[in-house]
Amino acid sequence: MAYRIMLLRILIACILFGLYAASGSAGAAEQAYPSRPIRMVVTFPPGASTDVLARILAQRLEEKLGQQVLVDNRAGASGVIGVESVAKAPPDGYTLLYATQGSLVLLPILAKKLPYDPAKDFLPIAKVADVNLLIAVNSKMPFTNVKDLVALSKSRPGGIKFSSAGIGSINQLVVELFAQRTGMEKTHIPYKGGAPATLAAIAGEVDMFGGSRTLLLKPIEAGQLRAVGVAQATRSQFMPNVPTMAELGIPNMEVSAWYGVVAPAGIPPTIAAKLSQAILEAASTPDYQKPLIANGGEGMPMAGATFGSFVTSELASWRQIIGRAGIQVDEY
Image (cartoon, rainbow, N blue to C red; front, side, top):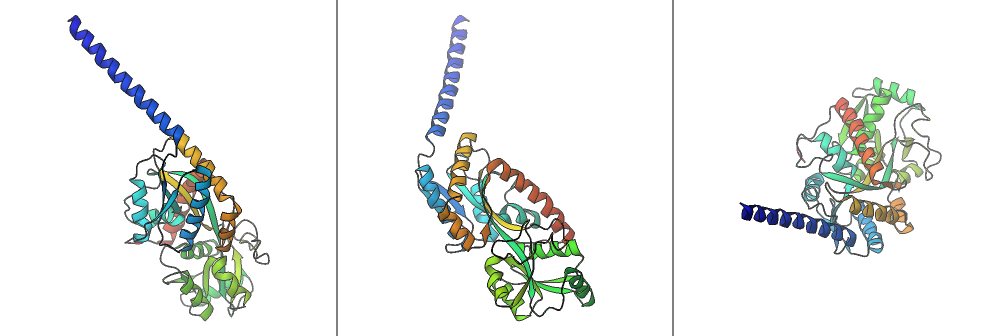
């Protein structure tokens, strides 16, 4: 009997020692992080504006962390392939996602089924960019204020025709929200990308388009399009003569396409905090901010916990807007 008790005590001691050693090893690994290259998944092909920004951020992040940050382009299926790969990666801080609003918020609402859950599978690390949007119309559109625009839409069969980069795109959603806030009647005509959607508005194939400054500034300056308003809290420093939606009497009309960095859920808090601080510093450098501005971006970086609350609020508000508009995509 005594012999069995002694064996049991030895076994318990071995288990406790193993747990202590494992805990010590995990703590040491966290202290040494990063000790090898980090992979940042981008859900767009090389050369896309999102890819360019991700690569610049990766370069600045290397300087902050002292390790390589390798961009891994995994395009396809509206970004689902790349996002899913990060959701299933080990939560050790060595796999990150340069996430878009589309993959974390819009697609999870629009699609019937996805192989990932943005609320459960990821930990928000930092928001690194906002691309603010504005609404513009063909310069020949005959109205002088929003009230007249709404009246004009109701006098036309099908209302105002507007273009977008595709069903469920932020280009469609900003105009859908505008219509919900104003009562404007409209017909959506999707195109394959933001550039052809902009050209459609310039050519008069459609009346209206909601997009970024990079798409709309030059045709507005050339007199081909006319800005209605910017969907942000304050006037854009790049388009100071264009009023905000609030100035036009349209409340709760602040819309941007944004980017952020997330990690697989379960990442150790110490590693998440270290990554968040490094990414905030990297995204604040002139080397990142300059190309961001050139690609229509504005705004300051947002830390992990605040970013997490922001994503939650985005999911709630867009779910309501999209549900009211009755938009759904069957495939991704």
